[in-house]
Picture 1 (cartoon, rainbow, N blue to C red):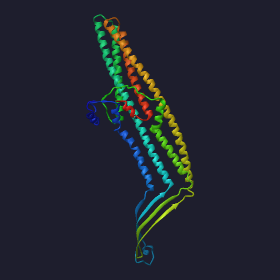
Picture 2 (cartoon, rainbow, N blue to C red):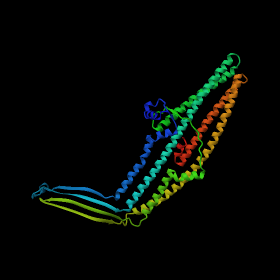
Picture 3 (tube, rainbow, N blue to C red):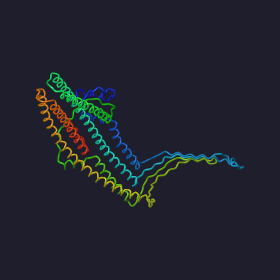
Amino acid sequence: MKHPFVCLILLSLPTLLAQPCWSLDATEAYELLRKSDKWRLIETLAPENRAKVREAEAAFRPKAGLVMREVIAHINPLEFGLTTSTPISTVGFGSTAIEAEWTLLDPLSQANILLARSKESVTAEQARQYQVDLTAGMLLQLLNVQKLQKQFDLSSANLEKSQLILKLASAKHQVGAGIPLDVARAESLVSLDRIKKMAVFNKLLKAKHDLALTLGFERLDTQFAPIETRELNLPDQTTVLKWALDHRPDLQSSRVAVDAAHEAFHEASRTFFPKLQVLGNVGRSDTSILGLTSDYVNGYLGVSFSIPIDASGLIEAKRLESKVMVSKSEIGLREKINEVTSEIKEALENLSIAKEGLVAAQAYVKTAQTEAQIAEHRFEAGSSNGLDLSSALTNLASSRDNLNDSKFNYEAAKVTYFRARGDFTDYFEAQH
């Protein structure tokens, strides 16, 4: 990429994306993904729960408020049919005060704080896992586009080759050196290659559209870097599995959920739930009754301590709920450990199979290239018919398609492996 900064600016303008300017590889696609709305939406999950933690923690912070009260009553006896009257038709009284409250001890509020903090930690790990899954999906889409792009290039080359064979067969037939059957076979080969090219082109357009939507663009008409298969040097299965069990985000969130459930159960297992508060009030009151006015200042400062003895089954329900939460979280953790272990083993096995398939496909292409060259020389020399040549060319095209698929399968297996580990840092480092 000669001008990366210019191309990045162009990519930010959907109206200019119709003009290809750069070759998009995995690392560049990942940088675009991190700027997409989907990625930013995932990043909003943790701050939302962080706000809930602060809201729960506010239960133990001092609070103060201004309170203003005023009551006005109309008391004219004449309106009720009475003959006596009073010197005033209304009575009003009001007060203005500052009230303060500071909770020093409240086990239930403390449990709510622990629960909010655990939800924040769980959500943060879940957000990381969502980003890992989104990255894996994007990389598989990019690999699919790269594979289809290579298939389109191969189908274009095959079409040009078959058209050349058709011209050569027609020329030989015109001078009496060929047979009509060779021309018909060449025409069939041209038609078949043209149909293949059109089918691949339609698949490529659909794959580009899906990738563009994932990256946050309406269109993404740009060049794509070819699939480069770099061999991945892996440690032994035990080391890989241990790393995944220690670092995978969804496993971390499951462990946090277990810890939070045990803390909640500990809080709910208390015998008493005492609540201790410091309360205060200072204010001014004025009263006007029957024309008499009074103005005074009052206030108080005290401690409120309460122990609920019976909460109509609420405390026992909290204990039962927390006990069930512990069981569910521990079962979920064990299931997640088994799931990650299975995914790691399957990913490593798929990597080994894909690598063997890639080596075999590379050897198959070399053999098919040699056979096609021999068949082409024999056809040009007139020592073989068009059937041998078309068979050799078809075999070569099939071997190249197979190699392209094998490269895709190997790179897709690598993406699946890093997704199973829960981190793509080493994957992008291996791209350079």
